[in-house]
Length: 281
Image 1 (cartoon, rainbow, N blue to C red):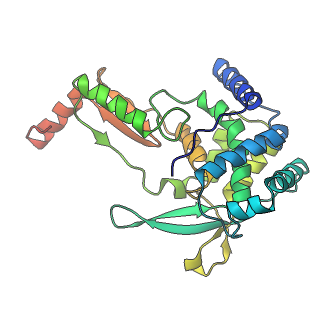
Image 2 (cartoon, rainbow, N blue to C red):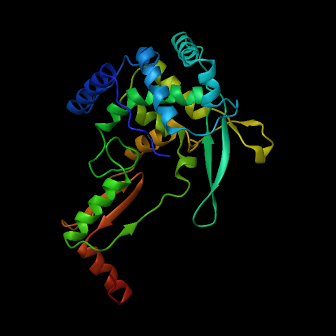
Image 3 (cartoon, rainbow, N blue to C red):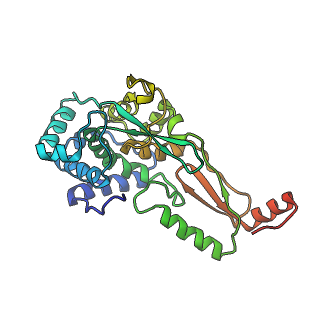
């Protein structure tokens, strides 16, 4: 189910805008005082509301949204606030589940506990504005106000301009193979707050529980399990590790949805047609 459109509280929106504008103005800007914002109760409350709107299954602890809310959402907010403030917070393990893929294979997903999803979302609310300043306008994957529908609009506009060849590239097991060390280096390019970096690292290294592997917590040495809040955000950040792919023709359009690039170019079409010895559309 798609995320409900929730209104960002004014104080959080103003903070996000200030972070974005500062980063956009100075490409070398690094935020040094973010961690104290993570455990703000208004940030945690909005983070939980966003996670709740996404719904989703419970994590390894089995606690559902309904059970948490029956106990009282304030209890969860207070627990996370105190644990994050005193730096005693430790994320729980991630439950591994598998869903079928269109090609007949399976896609592994990682389902964190609800409380950990809320903590991840609080981090995302603060880091995302910094990283948004670094992304190209042609990147559409998992970004605010940019999605697959807007990418399709760009495709439609490209086709109307005479671009009719599509080169669709896919990165195999992208989420599972992202190296933690390189990812953390890209995060550190915008964040110098050691406590915030340590929290992000804990999310990445949270153990994985896979029933197919006996159900024992297993260390997560690389990758970011697809399914949690931190997964899509970290994948987007890791995009910046990839060099910019340019075409020699000036009339080529390049789009990205995640790490996968799409190109439209009449010249590319002609080149591929010559190589195949035929013309197709």
